[in-house]
Image (cartoon, rainbow, N blue to C red; front, side, top):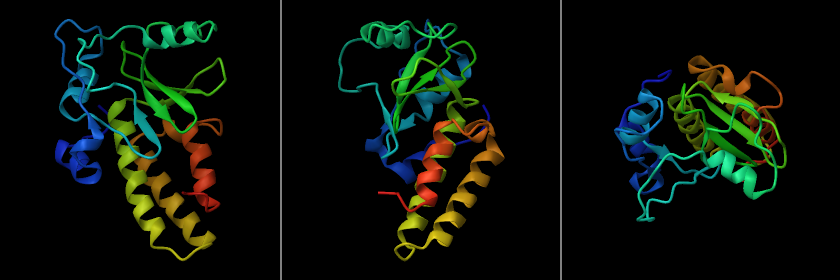
Length: 189
């Protein structure tokens, strides 16, 4: 794992009701460290990221190639190499998927047939979401239209995220780059 995150840290930032824990299945075909993280730490739902697993669903949880099924439902071919990946959730205007072989996280921009590397692993995703939440709290204390303050906060968040994993800002077409552009312009709702 890229980031050493403790369960208490995630609960203190997001509250227990906003965290989805994935069952740890002994026969699941998923990267072992990733499975442990999703079971013990979980994934938070925020205003930017929503987990797609429904904990209220009583049917047995199984990792199936949910990304391929989603593309097939839309009548589109799944991008080559991603047919076995699992959808974890939605990030702003993109599906977020997990490669179960190595635990890497990718985004699929809405309406596009390609993917972009998003995080080295799920711990990095959670670290970035924690940083985003801490940045939001700082942001809300700024006076309206303080573009310099917005820029300072986005710089602080970007540095904190890239200290753990540079993947989120590796390219201008990444979801994090797009979101941070909007935040720097004062478009944080």
